[in-house]
Image 1: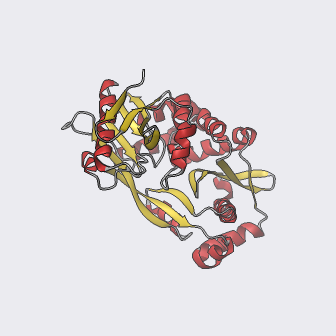
Image 2: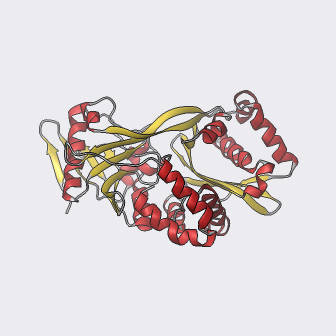
Image 3: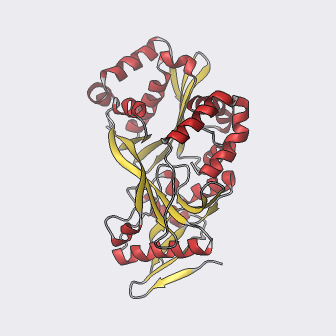
Length: 364
């Protein structure tokens, strides 16, 4: 049964969301900060792939949605039970529309109350918290800071190439062209299974990171049939790099890149980024989000395209006031040592069996 809370004097009712997602998504897409993970179907993708329970709150005024808070309830042997908005994403948080400060506080309290009933210990929000400078923001403490690399697009992609990209990008694209590297877009289930998945496993092994299950990607393709795009760079007739992202509202957001390191010298990764950027410019998108920046190499690669680095991170709040919140940093020494062991000792064929289990409990 869904709980609901009417806020006296405000005419706002907060409840668990139980609709088909249509009204939720209409509201989300009207908000400038909306990402693919704010849409209703993302919680279903995560539930299908990882068995996390959808934990979505909605605020309505006179029956009209005025705020949404997409999240999941995750159970982890390492981190306990916690509410995450959103897992496996650099973004999440509240899309508040015109909600006033006291109403935002009530929304946070409603989430805390539901979390307590579900025996969760804390709330974890990724990216933009969505609480402006309201008093409710003081309940959260920042953690795990990272950057987000954003490129402003232009209707003329060639202007970006000439005036915004650094010389090394132009040089890399020329080299890819000279060597016959071809770019194309294809996000069909067949190419996802036959080519993206093996490249992804290879890339995650190289990075020392456990992979998602294939079901996560097939779920994304099924639930985002129009929004999900995969751009490719092929060498001969063989895909050598892939860039997976979402075209939502006026923004393109990249979530995964996979490549075959044997073709890096042909600049396949540069080519797939250019193809996706060019596609976005020609279709009127305004921003290209390269994804998170967590170490120097990522920053160098993304800044050479003219991207601006914006602040990101996690926001943590205890369910019970006064209790200590816990997290870990993916850049920690312990995590680095574990990545090294994974990279050196786990064969590629074993990674899709062990990786999703580890990811489920890391909630990363």
